[in-house]
Image 1 (cartoon, rainbow, N blue to C red):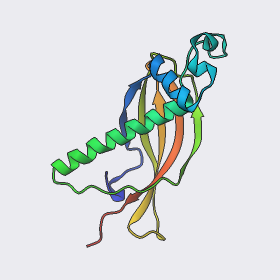
Image 2: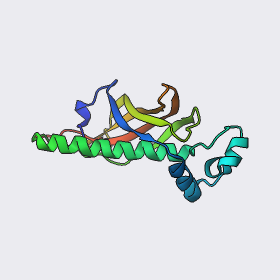
Image 3: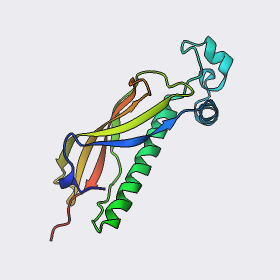
Image 4: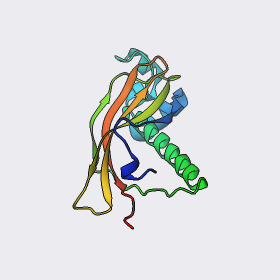
Amino acid sequence: MKFLEDIRIGDIDALGSHVFTAEGIKSFATRFDPQLFHTDDDAAARSSFGALCASGWHTVSQWMRCLVDHRRLADEAQRARGEPVAKNGPSPGIRDLKWLKPVYAGDTIAFASEVVETRDLPHRPGWGLVTMRNTGTNQHGDLVLSFTGSEFIERHPQD
């Protein structure tokens, strides 16, 4: 993880991608969002979606999985180069969550995060706040997921 001072507005991280399979869609939905258009092929075909589609929560959870994996690998690479790794703190939340298009079985969604704001936090010495626009785009180039999230990020230690 980069320190706050090393993060620039406009920085984009390609986080990776995920292929949504019918089995994965049904498994997630059965546990967390058991609506018929996520769990039953025939019912989904008769729905407004026209086919089995992933829960929006499934799509967001895969974004999170890709983010965590991406950061773990980036941190390992920084350590291997002998560079210090900043700590990240909790997220104070997300806003403007939009599921823009359905994610169907067989779709590959590529996830990304773009820095849209950084800010100092005088009331939290040693920490800043980074705000990112997070997206998921399908194999046709269609935006299927968008939300804005913020996260506490460590500043460079003072000498």
